[in-house]
Figure 1 (tube, rainbow, N blue to C red):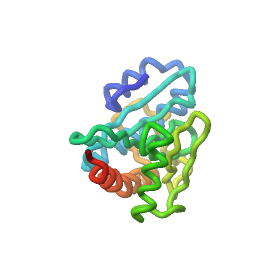
Figure 2 (cartoon, rainbow, N blue to C red):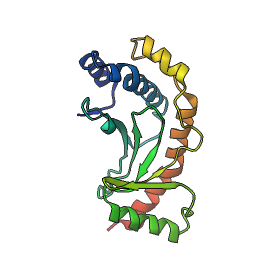
Figure 3 (cartoon, rainbow, N blue to C red):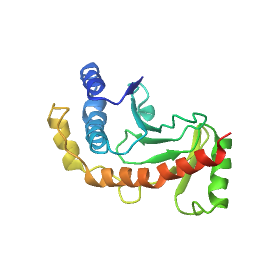
Length: 186
């Protein structure tokens, strides 16, 4: 299920899956950290946050952050943070492999991005995307453990390394998204 990433929906998920040990001990603490980061980054415009949770397929659990462009809606730029043990920030340029390749080649051609600046991942059922977290590979376990113990969803314990990687990703890619939008307006 896909929900807007709000405190109300986080509370609903917490109640609905309170008996699911994977959710309680792995997913919920990460959601709490990411929600605190979301609240801390409200000054960054044009971001629409959602959480996707599927109790039967944990590989589909993620937070997505769509870059909103009200004037030109043909592009679908978004960030993805899988709700797994390791932290990873992914950037998608589109919903299809072909569009990703076209846009990536444009970014290289215009020297907006260099070829080895970010790693690109793709798999059989995965759209090509950038992995841009540079410093952080794991969540801070002391913060995860504190969130596991406390039921308060409004507690603002932030993993600063995760926050810095997310904020850095926004600072790098949001202007790139704007450049792509302005270049390809029809």
